[in-house]
Length: 339
Image (cartoon, rainbow, N blue to C red; front, side, top):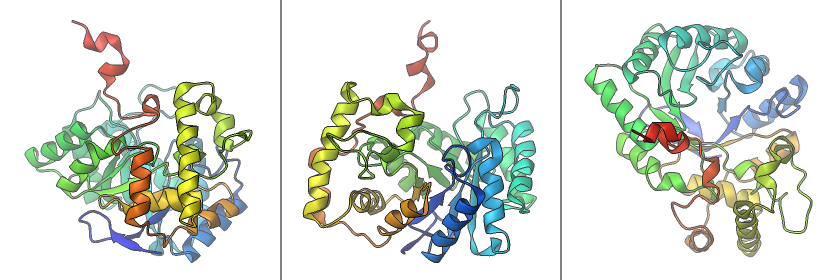
């Protein structure tokens, strides 16, 4: 396992980090299975575990808490808040009211007195940067969080938050957690240059592109992954964007085979090769999944392989732009772009 500094914090984290989204109902993972995955990840050198209140409406946090009991100090523990929890209209977003309440809920579920990294799961257009940063700064000073970061923020919102912190003399986001893979390279255009400019650590989620780059999705095979059951429209090859992805996967498989790599090694090696990326978040449902991902821990792609990838999916290109989560609201809601 390799280790890198998380932004400018001085904290050393593994280049492969464990994402716990699949713990519980989402991945049908039991507590015993989750604990075994955490055990194997730590044994393999992983020292960063990332979860969120949204995952199973708290179930993932509870399972992570039980799995790390007795070894909290050896782990860089991260969680997130901001996405809706239940139907109550104020149980979401990044207001002081909700963040103060929900952090206590997360700490209780995790069974800890602090988290190392607390992240705003999505940009909340209804709440000012000053409101959110002020609340996070107070929680940091209270010792409940060590650092805080953003997740899937548009580049311009990352910049705005940095300036808001400076203007109001508040602590700032030290990390960003964007979606990034060979098939979704759009953040290379705007987000990654911004994170490099401001010295933010980057924790890349979905480096296997929801399973498209796991080796399980190939032409002529029935797609039977867990994610394809949950969101079948993203794997329907009658849709042009999905056909384009499948064509790219077939060409990438040839590159991997020529380099004597698995698809997973190619995919994770690509993400961690970018100088702006600190860690790639893997989200295994089973021990077998984890072991296949840990096999990429020391993968370093050659320049020839990286060039071959660029020829298949050009830098800065998203093959499935409709699946982006950082699109400005006015592009999604016509009323916001009409006078």
